[in-house]
Length: 131
Ligand code: IDP
Ligand code: MG
Image (cartoon, rainbow, N blue to C red; front, side):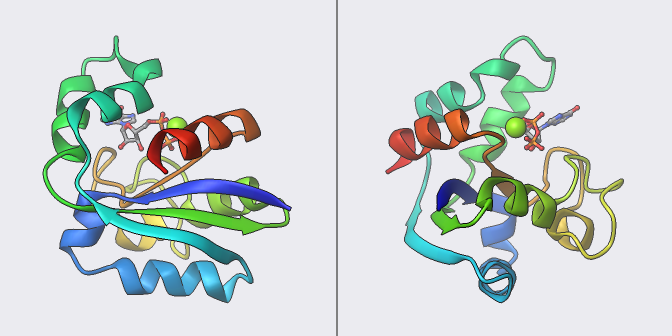
């Protein structure tokens, strides 16, 4: 069994998409093992996205992630990291196929509704950071 960190980002929470996203995760047979609503503080978001700190959109990204509450989820299941990346879809909501969370609900490349860890190492360090 693997575990991953999912964040329902501020746009997802503000647009009342939490129930729909949780439903998709459970419909896929994955288990939500932790779930917390919180508002993220700037230093944690900066650490989470440290790999993007030299990109021109970094300050907008950090501002967006701290604008309102998020839902933090630990999701557990077989190959859950890859399965959740598949459910999320590609980063850019405008290019993400219909049927994916970002394709169905995301509105831009930044406002793409959810975060999903992209490797075992990332998942473990992100779960430690946020829980
Ligand atoms: P991922 O969330 O699909 O793993 P990353 O490249 O790790 O994508 O980027 C982290 C987050 O930064 C994205 O989910 C998105 O919110 C934002 N982002 C990524 N690329 C861009 C961009 O080119 N312009 C604006 N925001 C971006
Ligand atoms: Mg990423």
